[in-house]
Length: 214
Image 1 (cartoon, rainbow, N blue to C red):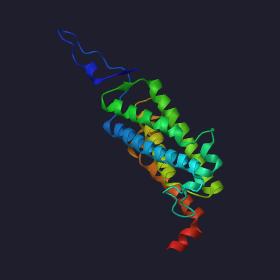
Image 2: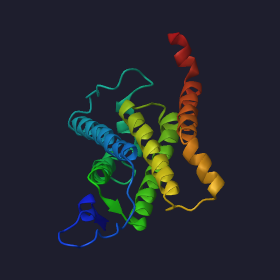
Image 3: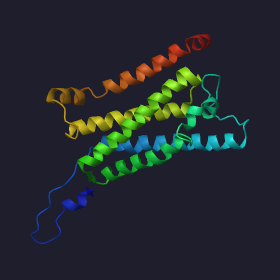
C-alpha cells in the first residue's frame, strides 16, 4: 500500500493534512533503482534475443563473443544458462521492470510499508545470491565471461547493497546505532571492495591470457 505526495495537500475547507504512511526514499536512491532497472532490462533483453537466434541457428555468434574468454556464446550454450528450465535472463525480464516501477513510484511521491521494503530486500538478496553462483560457474566451470551478464552482476550487487543501506537508514532493518552511522557514512566501501574482488578473481583466473595482451 502506498500514499503519494498528493495525499499531503489539503482537500479544502479546514481539513488538516493526513499524516503520511509508509516509508519514502531520496531522489538518489530512486534514480539508482530506475537506471539500474533499465540497464538490467537492456542486458536481459539482448541476451534473450541472442539466445533465440542461437536456438534458430547453432552457428550464430553473438556480437559480444570477442575472444575465447569473453564469449557470450559459450555462456548461452552452457547448462547453467537455463538452470530453472528456461533462459536465466527471462528472470531479469520480469524483475528489472519491477525495480524501474518502484523507483519511478518513489520519484512520483510514493511511500511503501515496511513489508514492501523487506520484500524488495529479499528479492535483491535472491538476485545477488544467484549472480554470485553464476560468477563462480562462469570463472571456474564454463571458463568464459559474458559482457551483458557482467553488467547484470554489477547492477544486481548495487541494487542489493543500496536497498540494504536504505532499509538500515530508515529502520526497516534494525542495527546498532554505531553500525548504522558507519554504514551511512562509508556506504561506498562495500561495493568498491566487492567489485574489486570480482575484478581480481577475473584477472587471476585468466592471468596467462591477459599477460599475452600486454
